[in-house]
Image 1 (spheres, rainbow, N blue to C red):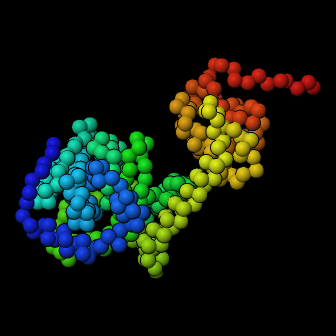
Image 2: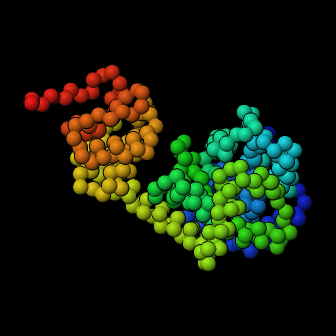
Image 3: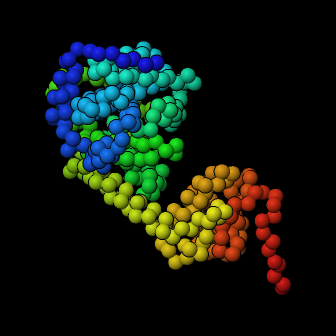
Length: 348
């Protein structure tokens, strides 16, 4: 469903005041650079839930880039999990977009079910967003950085995972996600909206402890910030920037080594003597490129990593369909039942 209409000047005037309070210089420089350098023919999509973050983002884009208003659209996804509240969110988003003269594209989760996980809801939402255009603006801010970092520390993420959410990221389908508000705290956005008299929608489910992120947000993050006795959110944002730099450096180093062969095998000889973190990254990338490889447990991955570092001829189970086979300094994926290796028996 699409809605596009003109509207009273009140919200437009408030948007201009908000832009004065949060100038372009306060937005993430990497995102601003992409916005300035990109083609004006490319449509900009804004993930718009009706909450404070996404509302502030939409208003700032509308005010700071007036020349892009004709190619600007808001995307609202109704998860169908909160009854009348969900319908109220959609109505609010339609009213905002009508007042700004911005196209609103709405989608809904037809497979929604009670008790759906946070991951399922997010996957459905992102599938809808990815169908609407190449450039998607998202309203993540510094609180989101700290929450994501704490959540991913709990599951043992490396630099790539801890560097999220990134100001600019590329999706598997080639789309781009831009997050200009990573330089701002949630409290700053809320204060700026209140100062210019702009209301937003509150999702009451965000206050419940059902989802892991909500528990981190309401129980862990406040205690962590109090214990730090300093600006912990800014510290987490700076750490994220450093982790992204380190992650990019490792990716560049790995690209220079070129350990991936044209036949899909991994040349282990090019990784001999290199830091374990680089070997780990190469192996992880190789596994992701194997469509028939099963998902390895952490223990299984560590065992395969140790075999890769040794480089000795061996085979390692990669699920029901095949094996990782090391022979002659090369790691290949072999389908099950093809006798990937013949080992000689040692004479006693």
